[in-house]
Length: 140
Length: 135
Image (cartoon, rainbow over all chains, first blue to last red; front, side, top):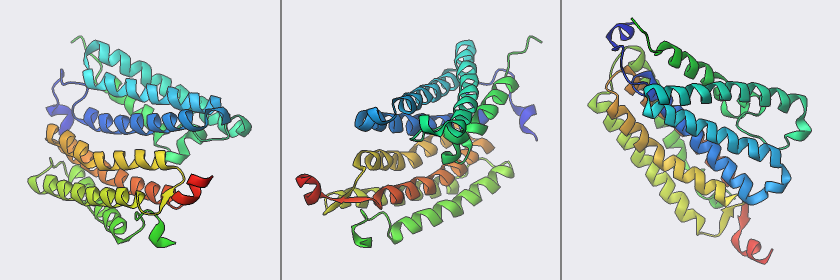
């Protein structure tokens, strides 16, 4: 509980809990990216939509990681955009993958709300957005 | 067939998983108690990293030993991620001398068993190199 008091107002976005998020987002960037790379390189024809979504998800995680890492107004904007996109992505793809399983024969990170990844992809954007809100620039 | 499972299903993997989980519990507890990573914590992470490195090297050697996972590319990707994970967590935790540094170590120790289990899963579907060459 001492943390919010000791954390300076102008502390970098990528420090404290932000550094934990860096690790988690970085992990997802690597795993989603590697997965998309393998899928597209070896059997792209089987499910182009799912694999392109995997690649898109990977890009979003990379953007979030970069945004958190560089910080400042620009980093915040990048992180905010990618976290919001990630939230919409996991909700839309998660719902579609349940409603229309035929269009998603192969899993993506966001399929079934990220159940293949312990639902972390569903929880992560909420934590990311909360962190960005918690560290919003204050005029006073 | 156990011996041909690219050697990620042996006692070494079990040891890695158990050590990682024990350390994860320790780190999460320490983080909850608002403790920054201690020398012991970083040392323990280093030793876990060594254990993981040995596991990965053994798995790589196994790749050239008769049978391979059908999905060799994915397997190799996971091997690279697995061996890189403890050092990355170590460096990030060094940069963060707060409770969140300890949380980084805890999360890394939770992810590692998942990576090892995924390696085992991928390795359990094997192709004989000789048979694959003919096919």
